[in-house]
Image (cartoon, rainbow over all chains, first blue to last red; front, top):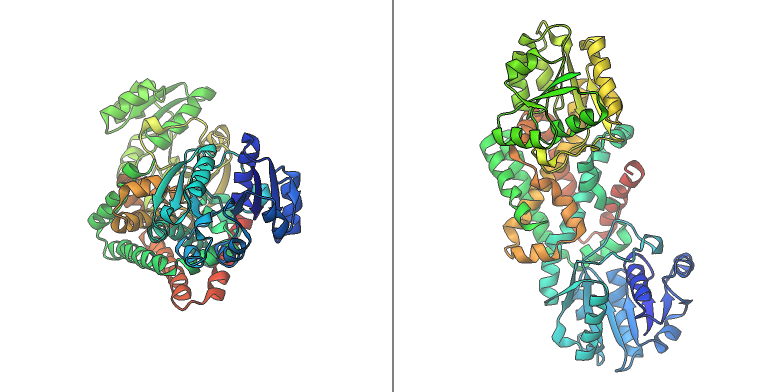
Length: 280
Length: 280
């Protein structure tokens, strides 16, 4: 299948590598704002050809949008204007409601599948792409009934190639769940990094002492604002809900410590330990 | 060398496995409150013999205290009462000021080395012990001048066997730095787990959607209160300082979102990204 890949970075690149290896992709046109990333993607075997958006779309059966969610909201209606009923497009964005709202009345709406593969790292760019990234992870398809049957089947086919399993939900539910499962983790990591950078002036000590625990909680703080500001913006209400609850939970730890109420502290920790039964 | 290991869990067990393999340990006496853990430790090759504390100490040149910090504060003075000037004892606790205060006027104070190998996981017990855990990590020795030269040299010898590098500092500095580098990470993880458990009632969705990012920030929330309540208790002032700063930093994210000030949000994220230059 001939494919247009808009955005040749971490997620788009990882999908392309797998579709190339599997043989599903016969030719991948790469479209990106960054000349450097396009060259890198070509050298890494992520894409076969650097192309303009128009040329790529007119020669592809499938278009993959793997760019920040604000850019998707802008570009998706323009791409739907250009495609016909034998072409399919899906995105990979971490928010969904804003994206589907931007095309809800478009005549080609049903050629689009709102898709979110649940994997990512704190890195970006084609050099960070990993062929086997998605194996065993969840792939969310939102608002399935608003997409054409053959379009959803094509995406399900790709989900299988990636070694993922499909979960279906509405865009609204998706944005609530990802606020809990992903977006709040990024805010706590950023805030934790800023806490340490603000108060711990001895950078060398951070570097030398940082245990695996710290590195693990602060890893996501390396993630770039180009991707994350648009996500927080599009999912503002849900993220604020979760952030308020998180601050409330932190205040309980603060109160337990201040009042030297170590029974409460133990209770808070025992409750948190329940995550053991839920997460692998 | 004949060694007493008090506490045959994650940290003590991991040290013992390495000292056994290397040949430094000729016989390890295991002392623990848990019969089950003692049996497991013997079966796993962590210890050679299950023993009473008194018997173990009277037959050992080195005593390793690898138990929660409140138990260390209680037991350390009693062990110092029992040992002579050709025996050495070190702990592995995550706080130091309270521990060294508990023995500051003890006649055998200089046989004790305040030690903290910077490694751990969210797991506990002998079955979690890993022989090569410590390689490449920092090993903190506190208040070196309060310990006898030969005692410090013995610990430095073990540090080398573990593949670690020594960092020296005062107990007070240690407790400030670990509040930033380790203790606050645990509180944010616990609070994050409680946030999700409080609001996200669909446990199955957490399990299915949880991305690697969430798992990584919430991993420490699996850590047991038996170990962590005493750490927070002993390092209360420092942990509260850092926790207050962390809540302040989270409030900045909240304010930026509420006011839709996305320039500020970007600035906060760019500042957090600086952690990239400090952490590997």
